[in-house]
Length: 189
Image 1 (cartoon, one colour):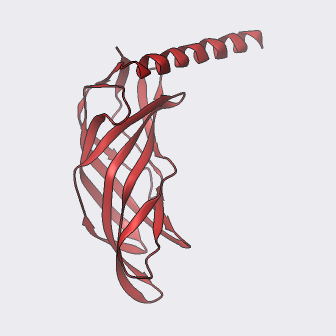
Image 2 (spheres, rainbow, N blue to C red):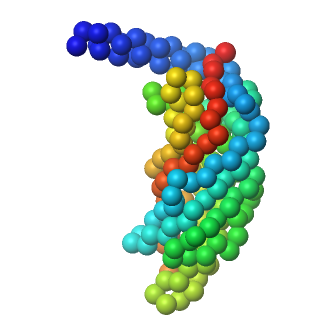
Image 3 (tube, rainbow, N blue to C red):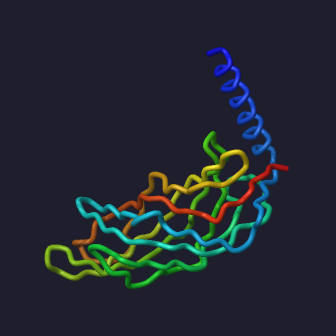
């Protein structure tokens, strides 16, 4: 029990030091930086009101080799989105690419960032009526880091607002799900 407490205390102190140094403009390095491809692990779910739509996604883009750990700094971008095997809707268009990846903060589990300017138009049948619905916003994500290696990234609580579409389109919605990522080494300098 005492041994476990010591390990937890050392881990807490290390995370505190990482968070403090990041607040001072620490550099985060990703190796290898550059091209990334991230398939969803199963289907992502878009929930709006009582409606659930599901699709497989693959995101492709770049991850910076190095960036300063400051909120809002761009750490990469999504330049291509592939959508397949949808249930309940059809993709009409992917708008505003590329989607910047913006640094948020370091947390105990890893690194939080946002996929900014997410914007897509979907064709859906709601109450027997075909409608095009467009949703946009930022999607917060947690990139897990264990022993300096990246793991999965999971979509955090979010809200995308409807920017176009008929009155049957929900006023807002949210995505949930997770993605795999080419494993990277993360270091703080």
